[in-house]
Image (cartoon, rainbow, N blue to C red; front, side, top):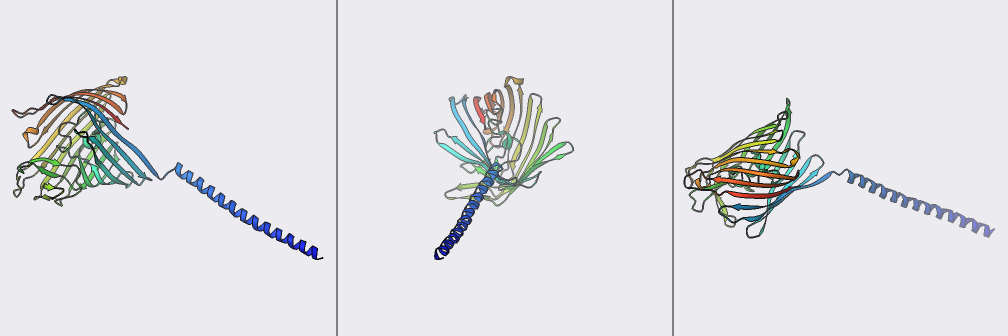
Length: 382
């Protein structure tokens, strides 16, 4: 009898232990299944990410031979562009500019950097350092693989007649309108500053690199409005800006000082027309500042430039011929220039272009000259 009771107790214990083991094993299996489920869900998210990263940019190398200087090879620059987008609502975009100076020293600059908030189908809020929306060349054509010439039109380079960049906020976008498409950009930014010569008697340039400080506390506002006619493949636009500007003196180490503000205005117009194999474009821009009686440089001044350009592609041969004429007028007669340029390009691919161009430069003022030069360039967009 005692043996039977012991055997029964042992059997009951084994059953209880087996049940406990089974429950523990089931929990482990559940944990493993949950882990596998999380991995599958993670894989699905990877296939449809909420963030996207895109790398683009351009680079160019070339050769320049001017009448007054020896011919030299040049590593023109390397400009990677990064886009980092979250969903369809926010995007970070930035361009870095790497170059080499005459001494072989590498230099790096921030071309632009903005955080863009998409407000709908027709508008985006852009905040940060952005390329000037005034005109077309600076914001859309200046990359070397897009520009059909190996140089910028005279007056459209850095710190010349066309504003380069600003730091502030901008709303830009486009919308359909009775068979045509409107595009616009409206901004408010820190604005430019005036740079005087060492003697402090003349203003040498309007600096528009995108200043990270508004020294005189006077903002600049403006924008561009354009219309695109798809049937004619024609884009026309007008640009304007206004604000205040002052002369900056001193240094970053000792501290900058600014004199009394004066008026500042920009006016521009541009067009682009594609007709079969012909690409025809032109642009006008003018920056001017008013007089200021309390300033060491009391007079007003203006920087004005314009160009027209035609490029013709020869069918599938990948060759194209380009001609351009531009003029640049400044308060300093020595900087005035009239330029004619002819060129021949070969497209190795849609984003790889080889260019050969020759500039005929002259100064319209009596007794002043300007250099002619030969330019060769290989540009790559990616």
